[in-house]
Length: 126
Image (cartoon, rainbow, N blue to C red; front, side, top):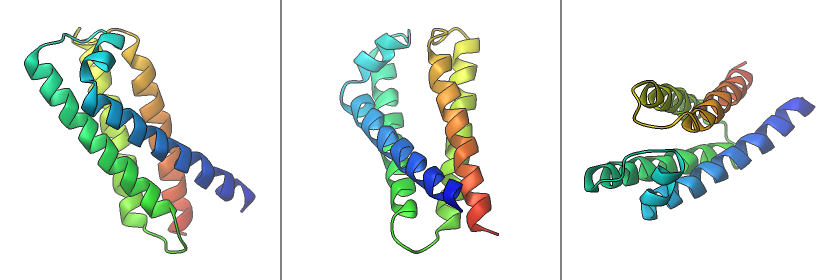
């Protein structure tokens, strides 16, 4: 039971980090693209900003699902699936030469986040 409380705190931190990084990606996409070696064009800035918006939305959904007394397993499940999808998408972009190997850190963080989220989902569905 104690580990579940720590896991919930860690997941809230992940949710807040997802919101913050999504906001940065929305409003300063060239900064983030430059850090991970992405090509900076009008199209990549536009679509990267859209991805940032979805990061804000899923981070907010996860934070909301973890707050309060109600269990929201469906929301937690979809947040975990989003993190797995992001890990795959970023890894594919690196493999295709669209992003530098530094972006694998982002993919790794998303993969770990997905695993932790699914651990929580499993715990609240027992």
